Image (cartoon, rainbow, N blue to C red; front, side, top):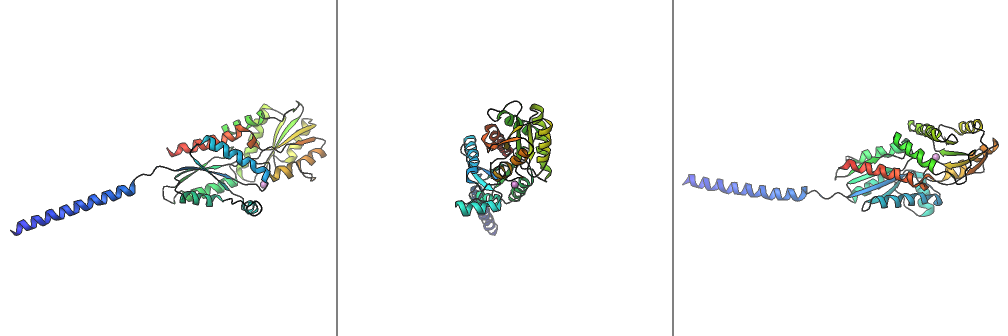
Amino acid sequence: MHYNRFRLTLVAVAILVLSLALVGNAMASAHGQKKPDKTAILLVTFGTSIPAAQKSFARIDQAFKKAFPGVEIRWAYTAKLIRRIVAKKQGKTWLSPAEALAKLMDDGYTQVVVQSLHVIPGAEFHDVEDVVHGFRNMGQGFRPLMSWPLCATANDLKAVAKALLASQPAGRKANEAVVYMGHGTHHPGGVVYAALSYLLQLKDRKTFMGTVEGYPTLDDIVAYLKAAKIKKAYLLPFMTVAGDHATNDMAGPEPDSWKSVLKKNGITAVPMLKSIIEIPAIVDIYVQHAKACFSHFK
Ligand code: CO
């Protein structure tokens, strides 16, 4: 008799354990169900305080929306001072990369390509990369990946040189030069400008690449122009916006602007306030970098 009661109790306990396990299982599957990925691209640029130069951003925004239908496209700006000026004077809220990433995470995005709109992999690019890495272990399925800037590989440099050479100023004569003004940097990534200069020179001995804050310098450019007996040169920013550097350092009336320095050296300078974003082949390099980055999620 006792033995039978003990058996009954055992069966009851077994049923209880089994049903608890089943309920537990059902709960686990409801929680563990894989939600579909939400994809986004965060476009990160330095920013510009000059409203007219912001048209570059609109061009890039359009190109990315066209290339990535259904993918959320958002923006972040690295320059704190510019974010504040724009917010104060233009009433816009520009987020920093960290703020924009936090918002994307909060909004439930999982696959996020952070596309650097920088020209070279310099200090700003690496600062953004640090922030992105910080967000990689935040959980909630949030996986931001950093994508290369414009000039990352030798193939990028070849494509950039080709795009620049294919968009020459209209009416340029054979004895006239084209001089690009890059930003330049103390960062090791600054070697890109010299490499690009080399690639341009291979195809066109009268197209030059200089920088405002790095190598090659304006003095180098003046020496090259004189050696090539150039009397007239078109000046163009090698930057994603024709902003403050292009308006003042390149084309401004001050005695140390590139235009003034060339004039002092007997060379007529024709500044053109046209950013490289006006060249569709350049925008396409950024788009291709983002596509390559997305392929890492698969
Ligand atoms: Co600058």
